[in-house]
Length: 304
Length: 86
Image (cartoon, rainbow over all chains, first blue to last red):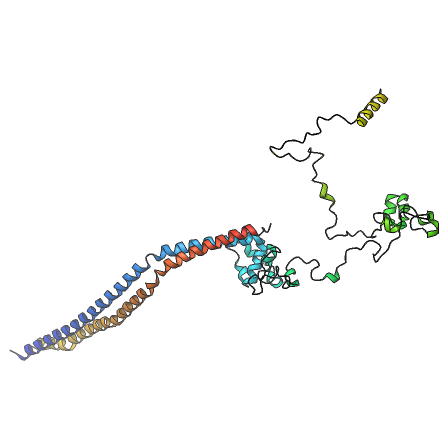
């Protein structure tokens, strides 16, 4: 065999050996890849299997939470109003009011009042619950409002400011009678207020007379000098009483002039009788009194 | 004869190196994939273990439902005892 043929054979053998080495190595690497992918596929399969019910469960949770959010938002706006609701939210979670309420698009444009700077947490709700609210019910000393010794002005300050915190600054109710700090002479006033200049101009000269009193002192009124009065004046000033000289009602609520507006006795024949109740007819069969009959006869005779 | 020698030279100096170079590239690529596949498998197994807590979602679902029921009862009570704003 020529030398060139030997060299050719050697070259081919070398090429085949190189092919075998690298291809076998590649096959080994690919087998490792296959094994790794099998593991990965198994893990992914478990992930798919385990996460399959997640969607339905999460959707159900979200549906329930949505219902809760709708309920709480609706209740808050219904009870506090949209503006106060945003103020309450801003007070509890500063900055949260800017996000608004999900079911109330207008809430994003509301300027929240600074309720938290005026009321402490829960005060507004407790105040709306009324005076029987269980304030400090969880206190070891018991509820404050039901505890006479524990009750304080702080609890009362939850309610609209009237006179519980600053009684000294408020005018006291007028004191009438002989012990009143301001005494008015009966001739100056017998009832109502003393007419002023404007009222005198409006009502005429008789009002000016009323300003001097029904019976002026110089004509022997009850506040006239003792020598001008009878020996035993029966109607002295203490008996006649005295007015306060003020238009201010003697009670906090004053007199409600509209209290009788709902009276229906004259227009609607009185209240509706109870169903099944028998009418009171005990006087229906009685004849007219004699004096009434005589009076009727007299009237008829004079008319005829 | 001369052409035969030239062919041998090409076979040894050109064809063999080219074959070795190409096969080496394929082998390197295949070997570089193996660590990546192993990491993918490990991540998948870890993810599968993390999802072992998925059944707890059923407990969460039930608790959310009960919580919303309590909130509804509480809100309904407030609706009764607290006056409306308007």
